[in-house]
Length: 157
Image 1 (cartoon, helix red, strand yellow):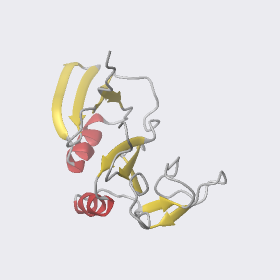
Image 2 (tube, rainbow, N blue to C red):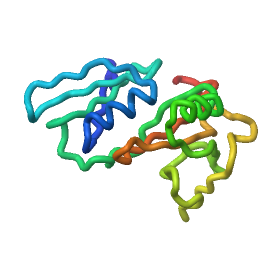
Image 3 (spheres, rainbow, N blue to C red):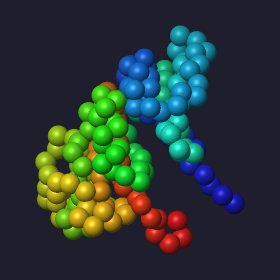
């Protein structure tokens, strides 16, 4: 049986502000539905994705901005940086990890060394290895996104 990740609930404090941000980001607006004063659903899908995000009033009790490590995969990290910047999105510089392939936890404005063996180095991975180059950004509430460059997936993916 397939188990497909379809939807991620994002906690936000201001639905209209979040809607404006995700429209600016270029995500496709699928639904904006208000059932009552206490319940509103806004549903977006990133370009090329089968998984969507949803937020609104009455959706979750999680603290706004508490969702971190949401990965968006791109084939060209520098092109993605240029496109997001042109859209007015505040993104980190492109970076890679000195000791490995998996980014684990830095967000825009944080220190470049986390004390646990990860060192963020400026620029894309020197060989532009798949899974090796990143940039980060946050929505207005602080929900954290990571863009990762994958040119060729690992076997079995």
